[in-house]
Image (cartoon, rainbow, N blue to C red; front, side, top):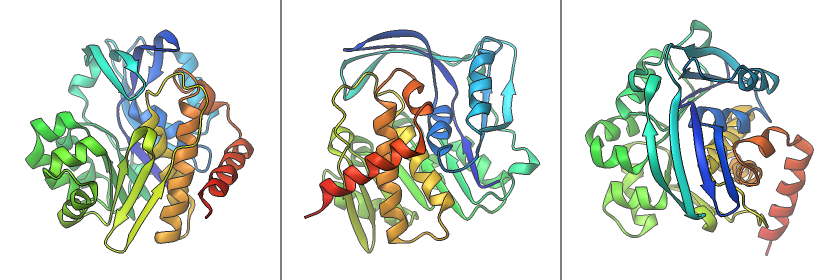
Length: 298
């Protein structure tokens, strides 16, 4: 297996300035795998309840996503309800962990020793457990959030020490390191172990940072944002899809992966759930990549 994604699978109720949707399919594993599927055949490890719609499972299969690691349990799927009063941050109205509360990732033997492992935004102890179970991936990437930083920082730092790439947003990296300058914060994270830190800055783009490189990518100018839910996961999925397909991990590959991730995220925010992204052709992705690269020339 080339790319294995571990993360949440959710059913969301989402309201944004553009409208609202009940029972919107979401979760870090879903958004990341849909984005990655444009370039590779990803595999996911996650848990769903009896209420998860078969039509969504069929859609994931249609998008070349391997579901051997998808566990189905009695009970309801993880549910989240949120509202965006602006498009930069969601206010959580309700969270029901349901079957996700006892999630213990089970790794199929076919998933052992993948080229790339993506540890989505789950408890850092589970991230550590997966690292122990899955053999020796060539590249391990991890995403996290402020909740784990404040509640489980010691375990999180242990997990960060074992990965090659850390995805984290600007507020989170400041919280993690206690540094207000993102580059100083980036230096602190690199001392924890990762080779690269990818700092997500929302509408201000993203930064790839390591000891020898600083690379900034602006956002693609989407004229009408419908739903930003899953944008960070779609970015990570697109980024890691590119990394997985590439022959080597170097500065050029990282830069192109940053652009690819930015573009997959741009399609994701144009609809609720992953409606727009999963229907987007690789030709449409390539066209936006070309336009974004043109805008970055000086």
